[in-house]
Image 1 (tube, rainbow, N blue to C red):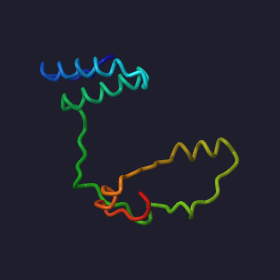
Image 2 (spheres, one colour):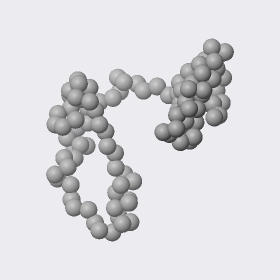
Image 3 (cartoon, rainbow, N blue to C red):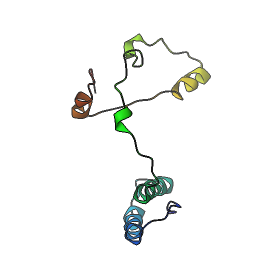
Image 4 (spheres, rainbow, N blue to C red):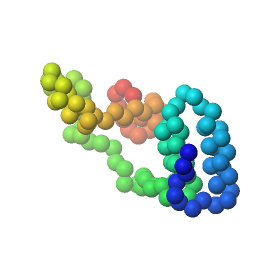
Length: 107
């Protein structure tokens, strides 16, 4: 498993080494998933990961969120369905977080 290219402190490098050992025994996930996880943790520890500026995040407007029952029926053409699925985003929030964020409806 390759770690991120960013420089880690000796303490963080030890954490990554321990994490690699712990993850190596997980048979439920692929090697790519293991490597991806280690890479993300390495980027986080090195400070390379980008941070979200939460003050810039706003609640989506009604024009952006489209109710399911107002969607047009989909085509039977597999190419058109694939094109639509490539644009699909599903965001699931737990009840408490959704409520705190001002979301209404099912969560």
